[in-house]
Length: 116
Image (cartoon, rainbow, N blue to C red; front, top):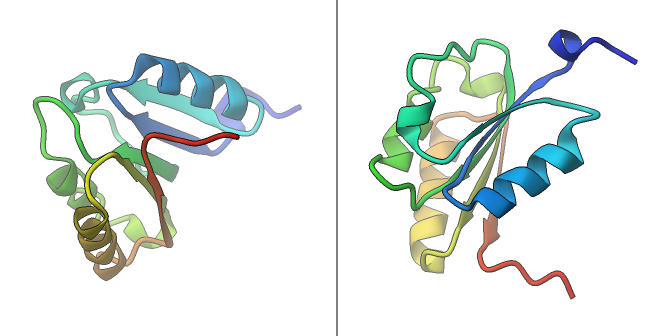
């Protein structure tokens, strides 16, 4: 089993604490997981080795699109998963912006989740 520092980095930004815990629990064996419920919690962390970003577009006290764009220098090697309860048009627009930013891959998931 690799040491945690050797695992790829997953950053999850969502104000839903239950979702954060579920993702961290599910991904902990294959990722080093950093969770944040606000953009302010992230502060000045350095993400040069970021592998995957899971980002809720509706983040309190922050602009998720600006945050997403802040990764433009490493986007070519970062997978982006956009999650949101916002309307489909808004989510698709943000996904298009992410694709233009040259993220390695861009996916979106609509909230609320239906696991049935």
